[in-house]
Length: 151
Image 1 (cartoon, rainbow, N blue to C red):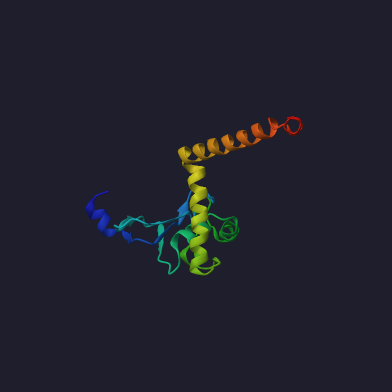
Image 2 (cartoon, one colour; image 1 turned 45 degrees about the vertical axis):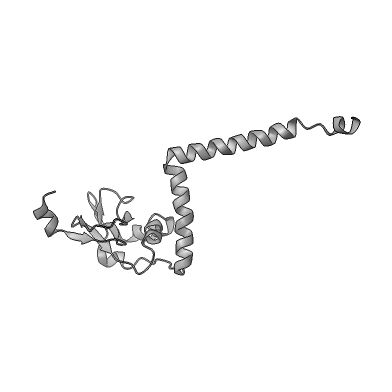
């Protein structure tokens, strides 16, 4: 992208939610990401920028939920290019718990995300869990109470 083009586009700043306003399918329209970088970034004209006064990662996780998807489907239009207008996006209900609860939810979902998407973390944790399981069953299988009592 040229600097001239970037200057003409909308800019997202740290903490903004960037939402895809169009897609080729219903599943991908309204995909959202919380921008956590320090620098502003240029955004396509087909994307929306939402500056929440809440935890933007919480809201981006909510945009991945079945509850959000069920609402979004009602507001999609188009056949080849699927759209959700900014007006209709504003009709979607987002449950907003207290900020501390949002942060707790984000922390839990971040950990799950890391386990699922970072193979090295997930594999290492799984290996450790299997080792503990092996040790547990080995000790159970090789503990003979009747021999301890005889000796």
